[in-house]
Length: 229
Image 1 (cartoon, rainbow, N blue to C red):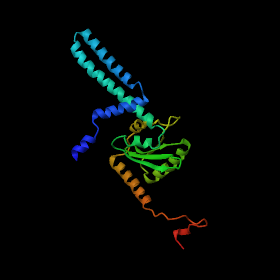
Image 2: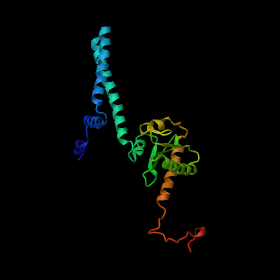
Image 3: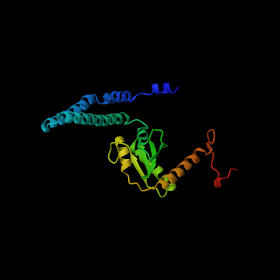
Image 4: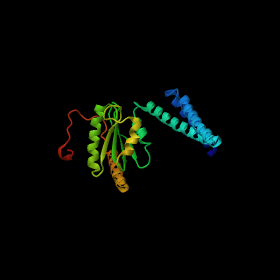
């Protein structure tokens, strides 16, 4: 069974190949550009080696630096292509948030509208970050409501709200991770755990609330004082 699972897992080279194919669909010139950067880097270092009288050592160094430059450039273009395919897709911001890194607890879709406007929540040492995606006008209302709720639950935690987009005052999808990492770390570890526990308790409470079955009568009224007659 273990051998079968190992054989089914794609190897490193296969993963690179799949990434290249995905990137090439969005960026057809990625292969030429990456190869050109690697060759030019190798050529420049090799030329310097001939000038100083050490072409062999410079050739080895040039090959390593050329490969490194090509790999870095390929990684950036692949990342840009991936974000390009994700932009405009529902839940794209949640996918980015879940790959921000350690120290963040992400809860996707804490608020949703029927028009697929969504607010996601991330909790870390920077406090509570609410990320909205969808129509900016509708998302602002969602964020405002969720922000008030967070302010009541976690009084000591700062609440930051972001709207995903390319408009004024918005954060592009590809810059969400960078934006979160630049936020000041103001909460100690135990406080982050406390905030997460409060939010988790609230979620459990909401999920366990009894929901009446069937439609309510049109003329039904809620009894005053919380007592049923």
